[in-house]
Length: 265
Image 1: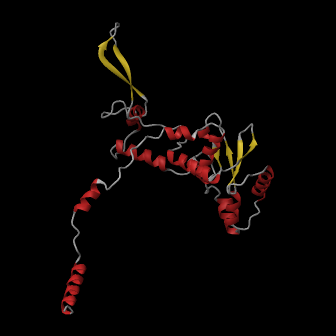
Image 2 (image 1 turned 120 degrees about the vertical axis):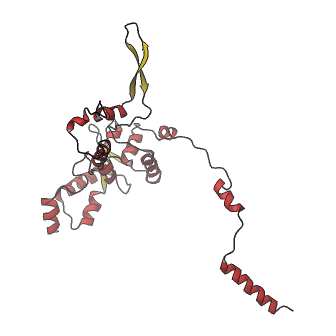
Image 3 (image 1 turned 90 degrees about the horizontal axis):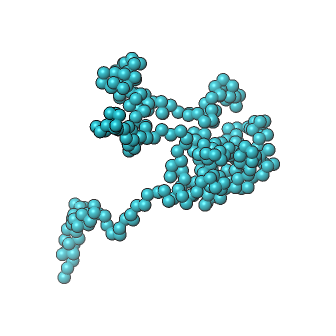
């Protein structure tokens, strides 16, 4: 514990999830952008002016990237108006690359939240109505304000003997800062929200506060046809083929017929 305290708590104390809430803990997005830049530049060293203007791409890379993320494009027709200027029309960009400004709650997260709500039915305790701060217990029991106060005291005192006790005590309660104007930008102290900025605690609390509806999320899902009964097209061909006996089965059948022939009357 002394080595851990000196090495990872005093000298290198920025190694854990939640050290900088709201900021990414991985460099995956930077590496993905770097890969796109290398692909557009054809793995050649170039100057900074290439991003604004080049012979192959007169408008530059920045202009192309912005056009890929634009919701509409301006189309100039050959027809001209009364002033002699070409008529400009707006067309929606069907291949738009969405630029997310808030966490993306996918259907997988919503389904996990609904399943957790049905199985565990978590209870939320309102700590501050002004700041919209709520508390929920990991084991699903109804928390009290006395438990919340003792929880904060334990976090301040840090009276733990080993890492397992620390992990179990810290993750016994989750504190949620609910953003009522935009519930998707809410924050929670659970492991999922600290790493991916999404968690099912926020979804369940937003549904209880009537900021989100599971029914509307289910209606947005595309309807797919049920699979018909019976074998599939690939399975029908397998059923029509005759079954070939293996070499072991053939030898056993031959030996059995020989033995039966000997003992037959």
